[in-house]
Image 1 (tube, one colour):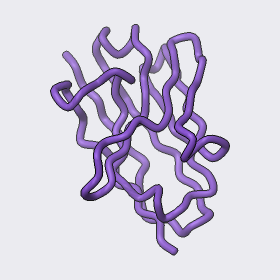
Image 2: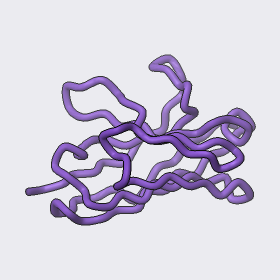
Image 3: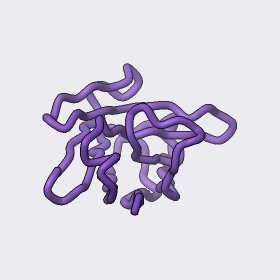
Image 4: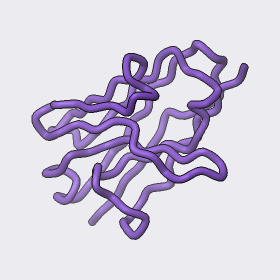
Length: 116
């Protein structure tokens, strides 16, 4: 069974931190590059961080130096540590395969709101 469950979002002031978690089930996720995507109101979904099964990471320029992605393979969990949050980070955050498209299965996401 394929499932993605994101959690950890919330309301935080600019400069604050949040840690998102994503529990996944299904071999399609365990054996693939995973990523955190986000979608702000009226915007396209964007990929902000990726991690391979071996732990190699990559980040969008907009979050580089502030966000850290990690994964715990035995626990089938991906994390996103977000520091120095900015109002422009406000979005619904989703985890999925890095190559997921709008036609892929998506979880419910978790809302992150950064206030000024």
